[in-house]
Length: 25
Image 1 (cartoon, one colour):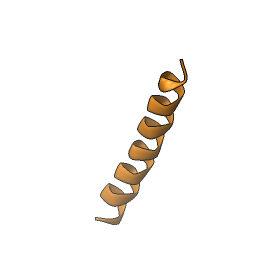
Image 2 (cartoon, rainbow, N blue to C red):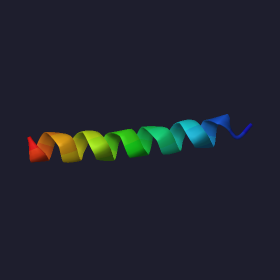
Image 3 (spheres, rainbow, N blue to C red):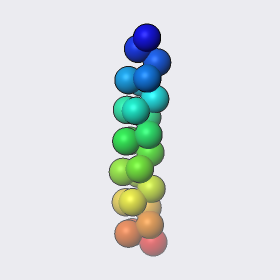
């Protein structure tokens, strides 16, 4: 059941990228 961990990591990474993109834009 390591899918949850992967999903959480992906969500965290996506959030960071989105924030950086929004801030830079």
